[in-house]
Length: 210
Ligand SMILES: N[C@@H](CCC(=O)N[C@@H](CS)C(=O)NCC(=O)O)C(=O)O
Image 1 (cartoon, rainbow, N blue to C red):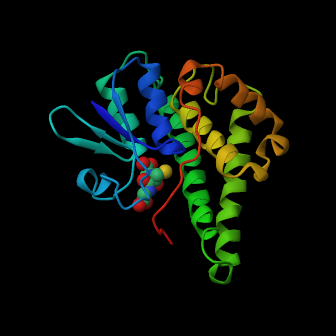
Image 2 (cartoon, helix red, strand yellow):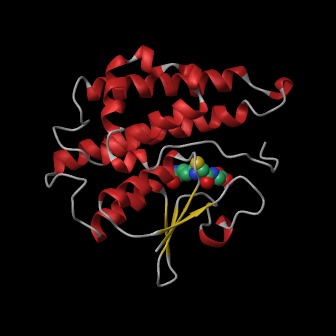
């Protein structure tokens, strides 16, 4: 099994962490999805990573769906509790944290446009979602080491991947100062080998994207 990933991608990091937590062996194929030479169009009609390339030639894409696939195919150790309310709480956090990434990705590329072509209302709209999403993650986590009850799982993988990515791509956001509880939460997540071994770092995009 191969995973197409990018070093800064919070979406791909979710999958790398889940596979590491479950000790599932895989080959990492690192690409820059925004460059013209990416192989993604051959594997995912949406041309996005992460993509899992399975040994039988089939593919699995979309980070939240890949997490679901991994949980079903490799149930041990579980990253979701057995009960519906617990599962839904993890999936709610996954939707929230992934939505923060979606909003900030739009800002990231807006900032790449020549200044005269940037839209402030568009940026403001997306940044409201980033701020609102982080505030909601902080509210849900509170002062606990895990986002849902007392067990690490998909909610923490997604929240930690989003926060770690903002540290790399948008350090001036300063979420650690605004939400000291989240800073402590993230420090706790970073003690896990699965988080340490997937610490994000930027790639350079050489093709024209916007
Ligand atoms: N909804 C997707 C988002 C994935 C995504 O946006 N990936 C970025 C890299 S961080 C990408 O491959 N973008 C290329 C493109 O949109 O053309 C998921 O959760 O997997």
